[in-house]
Length: 105
Image (cartoon, rainbow, N blue to C red):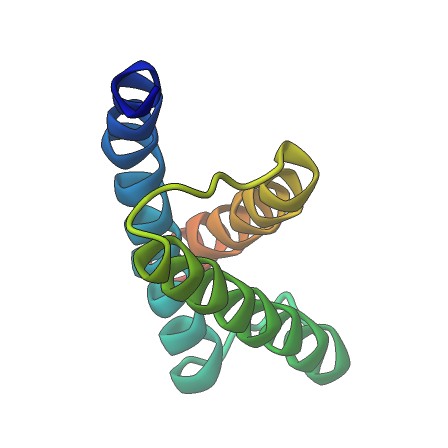
């Protein structure tokens, strides 16, 4: 019976582990941008709110990674959990593109 779960477990490791690492990478970059740069098109309140959301998502991703590691890749993550992270990163990427555009003028 353990052999029947092996392909599913390997698929989780092959897909979910790199996905979680990507989320960590992009949230870290977004956090650095929000903490260290002046973003003229964001109000202080909007910037602060976005930064708080990024920090919360980082905590969630870290927790998911710890759970994934603790279960040796036997636990997946529901799409209802992943989709808000993806939407937040899309929002952060738009801010980063706007920031780059404001600094190339």
